[in-house]
Amino acid sequence: MERAWRARDAGYDGLFFFGVKTTGIVCRPSCPSRPQRRHLEFFHKLGEAIGAGYRPCKRCRPELAGGTPPEWVAKLMDRAASAEAPVRANDLQELGVTAERARRWFQGHYGMTFAAWCRGIRLAGAFTQIRRGEPLDDVILGNGFESHSGFRTAFARTFGRPPGRARNGDCLRAALLDTPLGPMLAAASSTALCQLEFADRRGLERSYAEMRKRFGLPVVPGENEIIKTLRAELREWFEGKLRKFSVPVNICGTPFQERVWKELQRIPYGRTASYLEIARRVGKPAAVRAVARANGTNRLYLLVPCHRVIAKDGELSGYGGGVWRKRALLELERTGKLPG
Image 1 (cartoon, helix red, strand yellow):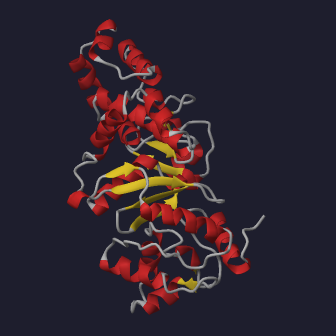
Image 2: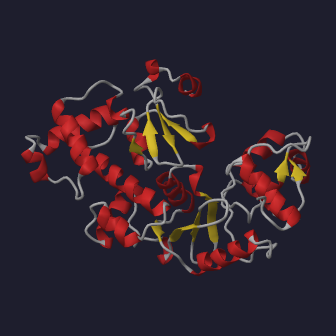
Image 3: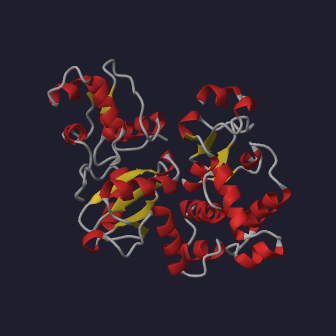
């Protein structure tokens, strides 16, 4: 898929799609846009991308990759993309389409119902606006949700569980926090920070779904005391005034991943360690690649400082937030200031 994307090979149009994390757009392989590879994720079906929070590119029209859809389907797509309110049964009647016919066609061609397609388009637009920092009330009403409760209902349909059904009355509160290196997505239960990563790492909706599955808790937008404390500490950390965070963390992974992550937390501020050193510290000197994979699956950036792990020769290897951010973070810890 990557080779076909680099070659803009139209022969693969319809066989897979790519989403651009920084824009929330999904495209076909032949799209003339040229985003950076680190901002991409690939999907086998367009419906998977829509469900992950992406909206179709208006330039390459990925929804047409399998051929021009029937005129009645094209009208439904246009209505879904432009409507300020949900497409209802009477809207379908005006277009001369039954709800069952629409459901069958979208299910067969995109792997999702027409209602799910509409909901995905609206939620994708909503989360893109939230990423830009627009007020939540404006986002909810501007994307056709008549109330906060309506938004929560749509949210629950996508994420599989309504917010009120939190285990033991708890849930993960998720918020976007501004930093000098770009917005970070933070999620915390009432007792610990569960996730902190740069928001352009993947589609926001996919991040919400992964969190819900991993921690067994519904995810809802908002803040709690953990996130409020984190917000203040992040500001001091990026100003070079704070070296250690006080917020508690929940490092939820496999036993091996957790051993690696705990070892990362032992790397002193301003220092680095190689993957080989970490492998030796966890008692697996031959498992350098496994350590690198565990490092790459860390979702608690800064607090579990995976940016302090470098290659044996001193080179700055991969980092989920981008090597440029890794370089900036190490410079901050070395000098007390971000470069530039």
